[in-house]
Image 1 (cartoon, helix red, strand yellow):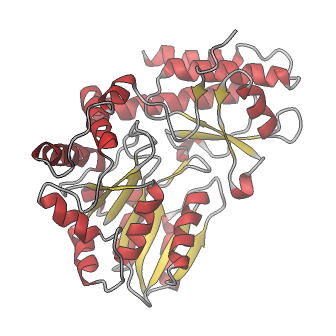
Image 2 (tube, rainbow, N blue to C red; image 1 turned 180 degrees about the vertical axis):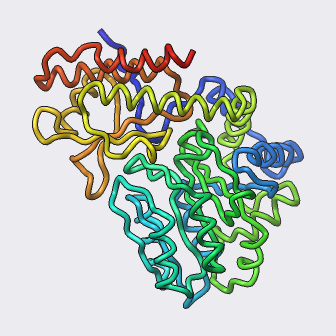
Amino acid sequence: MTFAEKFHLRIPGPTPIPPRVANAMNAPMMGHRSKEAGELFVEVSQKLKPVFGTHTDPFWISGSGTSALEAAVVNCLAPGEEALVVVTGSFGDRFAKITERYGYTIHRLDIPWGQTCTRGQLQDALATHPNVRAVFLTHCETSTGILNDIQALSNVIHQHSNALVIVDAVSSLGAVPFAMDEWKVDVVVTGSQKAMMLPPGLAFLAVSQRAWNVIEENPSPRFYLDLIAYRKQLEAKTTPYTPALSLLYGAKEALTMLEEEGLLAVYDRHRLLQKMTRQGVKALKLELLSEDEIASPTVTAIRGDGTQREADALRNAMKKRQMIVAGGQQQLKGKVFRLGHMGYCDPQDVITMLSVLEMGLADLGVKNIFGRGVQAAQEVWFQYV
């Protein structure tokens, strides 16, 4: 009754690849030191600027998003310096672990998972640790489905310290507005496999002049992750090391798709997908992990109740119908499941996802469930159109 190779991937990354992006990545290989490659590098950098909200020249590392997180740490902190890491979930925790591994002195600001960091919490932490040289933040915390207010938090950092503002925007950039220059963010990193609609393997970065001033004076050793090398080589229309050329072909096409839709329309679409998903889940009497006001437009986390709707059992029931959704991470493992709705995703995808979610609930013994979530999502979409 189904095609084995045809499944629906609704996790918060990797996300589905648009056919035209897949086709672009099939272009013949070229020399990475050629004039044509240089033109591709410059074009991708220019197309990234509005997505980051910056006038600086974004660049990339061939690696996962974590490679960019590590690059931000090792380039921006010198031996003996202190950093503050705001931990609102698993990926804030990853930032902390990277910083600890390099031996820097870190101070964790741990926020209950499912909540965002407030201005007051951050201000108090900065007052307690006045010598921090960098503050690491997560925009969308993928593990919990919340969206931190980076503009507000950046303002607090600038008002109460001289620390660099460094942001993990891996699961938000390309789906949620980001104004790096206006918000005075110093380093922003993201990955290719989320809202950027690409396979894993590229990490994109943008760096402020204030951060470059720090990086240029930083004696910390680094080689492949030396951001100065990437900046210098991009100015010469090349890269310091062999790049993932096929992914860059795809990046050009994916960024062209964002341009054609218009970034404002892209952001509006993701807000619609968020509302459809959340209203559908509420209609099914499932408990959302976060409040609407702080919810991310890219991923929704839902609690299991330990009985009929235990999270992993429901995921497995959905997988039988070829709908792949994500589980919880770390302390939320087995307690939540997560629905991705970013990148190459439209309202029809959400309707399908909720329909299979209803069937999964029915498999677990929930009665009279069909159509409830779908109807709630349809009503949101109908009013939107």
